[in-house]
Length: 170
Length: 170
Image (tube, rainbow over all chains, first blue to last red; front, side, top):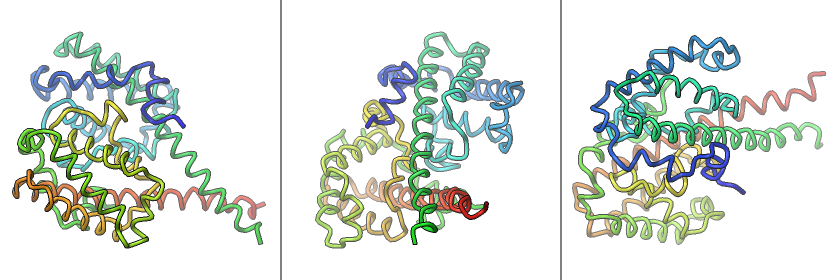
């Protein structure tokens, strides 16, 4: 059976060593602190919440935009060498667990990445080399979550088969 | 509805600021590198796999001890300021997602912590102050995973109710 990491690499086309090249330097310090991350996430969610692709837009219908922005940039800051803002406020990132309510399909991953690439392009404080590193991380992570989502569906399927078979087994 | 973080704090008795005090200093560097983490996880899993409490022991029946040891110390090293060994090999820690196969009950959390306290006590290279910080982190995290486990059960319950009701609804 393929691991989450293997699926993420195969589907994203990004090798783990490229995905986690964000750890080669401290990006938080290199980019000069929190502001570029706030700008990135604000730009990203502005695009997402204005997306005219209804199927994608609707995934975020139950989330408050300001919360989504803060959750995202606090996680990015923490993961890219800054203070652990996310964990102090919300606990472990627990990426798969916290994405349970969302249908993270291949198409959703690609749409998410489409907006993120445009958002990255729009933040001048982030240098081109850091943009490449961050995009590799985002791309690998997006498909890691697709793999996590499939795991959820498989497992629920098995659990429900048992539940559904009970009434007719007597 | 209580968040994962709130449940973790209430059930563990550990405030988030104490749980994430591991981030105040670089514990990996303070402890002198990887060896204390290898020793800790080896000692911990030796205890777990020799536990005469069968209900707890059996949770690990499908895992290979050497893999469990490596997964754990690579995560600890990464989370406590060392190189991202875990992510390079396995991807995001995704703590809740990766604990899906295991029944993380309150009793299991307490038994895990019982063994971890003894394991910590046995590693002389870890100073008493670091032990306190690490134990607060472990205790909070253990109950964070109990909260994650309950989320899983709730969600599966809902999904299965739908599946089970289909045959009789026609």
